[in-house]
Image: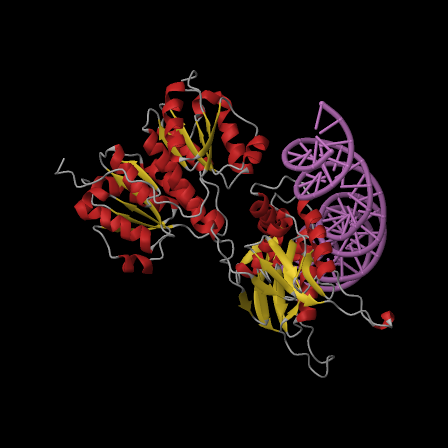
Length: 268
Length: 268
DNA sequence: CGCGTTGTGAAGAACCGGTGAACCGGCCGT
DNA sequence: ACGGCCGGTTCACCGGTTCTTCACAACGCG
C-alpha cells in the first residue's frame, strides 16, 4: 500500500455547499439491487431524486427541473441512442451520466460524443457514481448560474443580493458589506432566532471569541440604518440570552400623551 | 453482437465545432507508449497539445491558456493530491482528466471530489480518453459561450465584440484586449455588482491571488480612457468592499457654487 | 436589589481603493 | 544582438472607510 503513489486517499465528506439547494437527480434504470443501494446513499446525502423505470419523454423531464440524469442505456434497447441524442439536443443544460453494463470503447465514445457527460460501467460503486454526477454538476454550475439569487421582499424592505444592498421604498440603506451580509443572513432565516455564535460563524467565517461584541454592534448599526430608511417598521428583534430574530413588524404607533403610556418594551 | 442493445455504435468524426479554435491540451505523463499513440491521435485531429514530463507549477500552466489537462497522478508520487488540489483551486476553469493506472474507488472518489472532471483508468483507448476530454470541454463551453453578441449601445458608449473595441461618438477608446474584456464583462452585467474575484476569474481565467490589485488597476485605466472618450458620462461605479458595477450615468455637472451641493458619495 | 446581558458612543486599528511609477517579458524594427 | 515600445504586473503611498474594541449606561431576570 505504501508503495502506491496514490496512497492516502480516503473518502471525504463534501463540504456543505452552503445555501445551495441539493441537486435534483433522476435515474432511469431497473436493476433493483443497484437502485436500492444507490437511492439509500442519495437519501442519506439529502439529494432530491427520482427513479424512472423507463425512458421518459423529454417534455416530462423538463418539468422535473433536473440537474442531472443517470441512465442505463442497456434497458432502453436499440432506441436508447436516439433517446440520448434527443436528450442532449433538447436539454443541453442537463448533466447526463450513462451507467450501463459491459460496453465497447466504440460505444462509449459514441455516447460521449453524442453529448453524454460521463459513462460509467456497471457494476460500479454508488459512491463513485455520485462523485461523477457531482463532477458533472460542478462543472456545469461553475460558469452557468452565478445570478439565480432573486431579490427578497419583506416588510417594506427589499434585500438585493445582486447589489449587496437593501432598499426601502426604492431608497438605498447604504449598508456596508458586513452589514448587508448580516442582514441577508437574518432575513434568510426569517422568523427563526439565530444565536450570536451561529451568526458570527456564518458571517465572519470563523468561530466567535468569547466576549466578542461585534454581532451586537453590527445589529445596532443595522437597526439604525433600517430605521432611517423605513421608520415605521421594526425588523430585528432581540431574544435575551439567546440571539436575534428577523421579522418585519409595523412599529407601535407612539401615543400623543407619552407620559401615560407604559414604557414600551424596547424589543420583543 | 446483435443481442447487445447498444448495437449500432460506431466512432463518429467530431462535428466541427464551427469557428471554434481547436482545444488546447496538456498531458502530464511519462508512459512513452501511451503518449505516442495519444499524441499521434491528437495531431491527426489538429488539437494543439503539449506533453509535460512532470508536474508543472500552476503559474506556468496559466500562461499556456489550456482548455484541459490530462494528468497521470501516479507519476507525481504522493504530492499528486496536493498538486491536484492546487490546480482545481487556482484554475477552476481548467478541465482536468486524471488518467492513471490501477486505483481504488476511494481514490477515484477523492480525485473527483477534489475537482477532477473525469478519471480514466489505464490502459485506455486514446479515442475514449479524447472523447472524455471533449465531453469535459463541451460541458465547460456550453454555458460559457457568449459568442456572437451583437454590439451593445449603452449611454454614449458602443461596445463592439466583433472589434474588441469600444467607441464613443464614433471615436475609438483605444482599449487594449484586457481592458476591453473587462469592459465587456462589466457592461454585460449592467446594473449588477460584480465582485473582484468573479471579475478576475472570468477575465483572467484563473483564481485571483490574495492581494492582487490587477482589477483595480485595469478599472482605473478603463475609467481614464472612457472619460477621455465620453467625458459627460460615468460608467463604472465602485462598491466599497465588494467590487464594481457598470451603469451609464450622466456625470454630475459641477455647480458654480460647490458649497451648496451635497458631496457625492464616491460610489453608488 | 444585584448580576449578567444588551444598547450605545467613541477612538484607534485595520482595511480598502485610487493613484503614480517602477518593473518585467514579449515583440518589433534596426 | 540590441534597444525601444507596449501591454501587463507589482509595489508603495495616501486618504478615506470600515471594523474592532472598550467603557459605560440601560435593561432583563431571578
